[in-house]
Image (tube, rainbow, N blue to C red):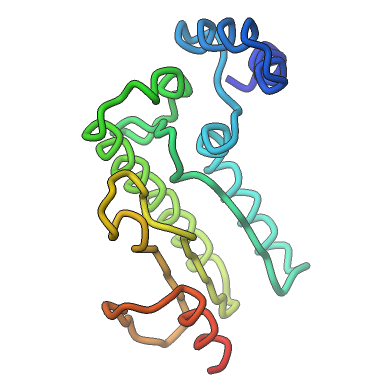
Length: 182
């Protein structure tokens, strides 16, 4: 719901007023507004972001396009059909760890689904040899287990190169550096 009410109450809440926070949560909970707060707002606009990147690629104006998104960060806002629901933001802090992990998995599934469709459109409609790097800066951080913090996501797509899984302990910086050395 990209409406003025969402923008007004989101801005008011952002300035730290407790009254604004209460009213924002009430309106969000009863589906009058949506959240544009940090990752929640980016999640709702992720498909639009990918379409803008697609336009930039097709324009042939750029040889490097950098995109940053918080789409898979909490709060988790997609349902199983990958429809964004800003209302999920309202009660995020009260969710059990199990529900947060479930929400994280749904958001990852949806993000990968959106990316897959994006890549299909780009690669089918382009004669250019496009190289992609997709990476996360940290793991889920939903549990105290080391893997929850340290495991990251890294995809490097180069035409005519084979898939390689990195299953040894290293850093994203090392992998990234190795790509540019080669």
